[in-house]
Amino acid sequence: MRKRRNKLVQKRVTLRTLLLRALAAVLTLTAVFSVGFQIYLTNYIDGQCSRSVDGYLRRRSSRIGEIQKEYDRTNWMPIIHTELLMTGSGFGAFPLPGSEKYGIDPGWTPNCYGCAVLTDEQGNLTVSNRRALAGSFAFSSFYYGDDSAEPESDSGFYLCDPLQLNIPELTQLFDRYDSLLLQAEQDPEFRYLDEYYTPNINVRMEFTSAYVNRETHTFIPYEGALIKYVCDEDYYSQDAERFPVCIDIDLPGYDLVKICDSEDLEYPCITALRLYGVKPEVIDEFGKRRDFSQNVNYTDQFDDGKTITMGSTAVIIDQQRYLLSARIIVDYAAPPVVKYFCTRVLLFAAGISLLALLWCLWKNQKNKLRYAMEDYQRALTDNLAHDIKTPLMAISGYAENIRDGSLPEAKQKQYVGAIIENVSYTDALVSRTLRLNHMGETKQGKPEEIAVGELVGELLRKYELLIEEKQITYSIDGGVTVQADPAALETILENLISNAVKYTPEGGIIQIKMDKKTLTVTNTVTQKLDVRKLKEPFVRGDGARSNVKGNGLGLAIADRAAKANGFKLKLSCTDTEFQAELRR
Image 1 (cartoon, rainbow, N blue to C red):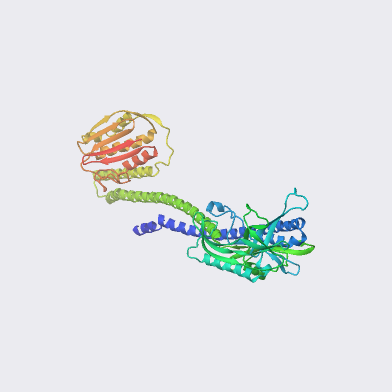
Image 2: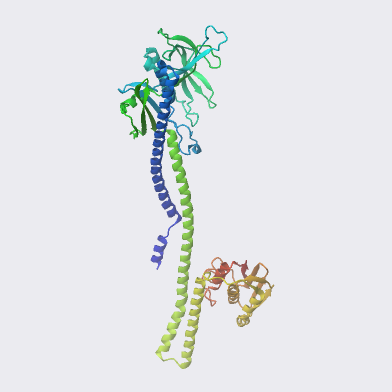
């Protein structure tokens, strides 16, 4: 029996086991979610890239048509080149879904950049958005012969492309710029100031004059400097190092002009000088991997974690067919993408962890109630078997003596009476055990007005003979009327009163007091009792069996009946008094 009970206890699931199982489920679900979300995110990024490429190609091809209507034929290609330069590197920007909620810039994804090229029918690269300087050139002149005429102004974008101009000093300038930029990124103090990946150490070109060719819309910087600067947390910059630059050339068609602020123009001049485009190696790699002459639109992925989305469309320039191609490169391992992915996965893990924890607590509480009921039923069965065993042994002994036939008639009648008494005791024990076991399962009766004092008096009269025999003195103080189920209240009071009568010693006192909220039954005892387990079935006295005739079910039945009907039974005991308090 003990081994079987140990096996049952071992099979029980503890809170720790539930938590470990839930943790395994959380890890599994998180892993599945992360894989699924990664697939979703890469598909989303690829879809955004594809739409961005398509939109860019539509806008640029339309713009190329507008340029041919607005400008002179000799300026078409330089202006188209400038358009590709200034807009090609930025069309890869797109938001991640809900990214603004997680501190990620919704309008730009770093390490996502685009490049655009224009190729002729032979596949030769005509123009591209390879890194170059672009500036706005302003020129003014007066109509001759009419002093009242307004000045005629000519303005437009001018380009400084090292590959197109093929000037060694200009190529060295751009190489020097890239070298300084790399040094800044490798500086131990280098960091990003915000989620927009604004560097605190950067390099800029700053020129005061340049050579300008109005026919080709090109220019070459003359005097200026490369400036390495450092920004503080408020984005205030200070020059760290200056590297003077002077490109002195003598080329036909180029005029030397100043570079000035657009608010203080001195015609002719260059304003708003900026560096645009992508690094040359980006274009070079683009050319190695894809054939520009093919009119295609697709997405491809590479082993380095990057994806490339390419599209192309045919355009007509000066009655010749060209292919405008665009590409977006996205690094899936870019910090914003990783941050976005990890944030979503962690939020999912936290959410299901909370649900798993709540489920574990609920399941553990449910298990505790079930295990408590199992223990209760097991204890009830064990105690019932123990209590039935004694009268059964007595019945067996009496029956064997009667079967021998050697007993006188008077003795036989005595044994038969004992057998009947033990059978009655056993029947009463089983009946009360069943009543206790099913207490609370049946529907409660309709509450009625009950005079508690009268009910107590009736119950005490049932025990008058025993009270007189033990010379017990009792008193009833108070009389109230309550709304309650008559059968339930009678069960509670009968068990409390019978318990008091049985366990009060000879010459003892029973006091019953009642008011609107409580009913107290106090009786004399000879020693202090441990009341912690007295409401459990088959428990009597100080935790063991006493010599007083009874089965230890009275207080257990009273307690369960009280709970089922909204009452609370409280027990207490001193060296001389035992008290049962019934409170609603």
